[in-house]
Image 1 (cartoon, rainbow, N blue to C red):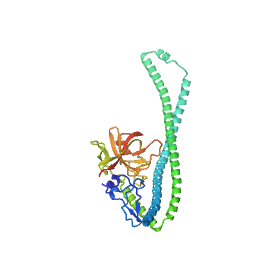
Image 2: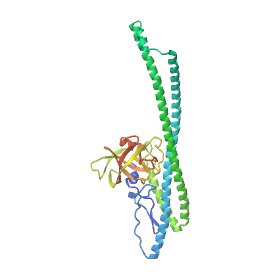
Image 3: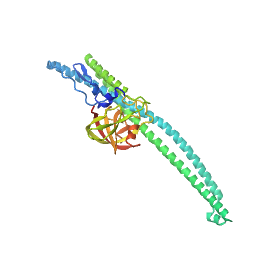
Image 4: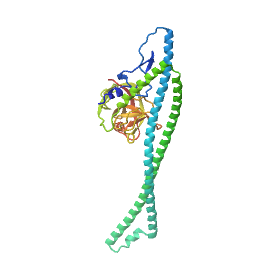
Length: 373
């Protein structure tokens, strides 16, 4: 078992932005260690002495200035995470577009051959001239001749039907593959639009950050650097919780307090008991795996299609979800961004989708939970 996994995965995601007080930072305890790039509630700072209103005012100004710099950094981290996810999806979509173009070219070649055979067949039929099958049969001299003529007519009819069927199949296959290529092209354009939008926002934030940091005092800059160091340390531990590609992923069962006696499939490296937050809603879920397996996710973890994870556009990294579809139940955690397709809420790993018994797109009941351990 990976030593950090139980710590990182078992907790609900908390912000890496530490609270600045007296020029220092309050670092989360291991139980509250969170994924990078989150913007959820932060732990409260320890109480501080209040020797005078003047010092308190100075401290308040220091906190506000540094907190703004931290907030900008949080948004920059979130945008960079989105960029990583978009880069991965653009790379996979690009590969699939190349494959789809090859498939279209092959389908068009097969269709052209089928059309050529069809035209040749029409010429042969024309050369044969029109004939009455009944007359052909009645002109038979004997029973064997009758049977032979019937067999010949049957083969001619079969050939006619097969030539037409081959042409129809080839045409349908070509249309399907062309539609699939167009769908990928639309996805590619949408992803690039998303990427451009985030890039523009990121450029603006970097300029704002530069101005904000330049206005900080030396003490405030030191506090900001301590926040960044704490975030980097948490990020390193989060990334270290990745399951190495090729390592078998073992599963176990877990329970949620709102559903006593009901088992959920869970990765064996995750906690076994969970408490509901009360947040429940239906979500339109797709799934991803091939092409992404082994790539870096938006959170920095390595994507393993055999693990029970998911991608969300909005939920903080590390958020744990109890998913239900019919009698099938599974617990996943968020470690990626997506899906970037309108009308979809979550992108499940291949293993999570299989555990819920679907391929394609399905509606799944979601319950946000936290580890009880």
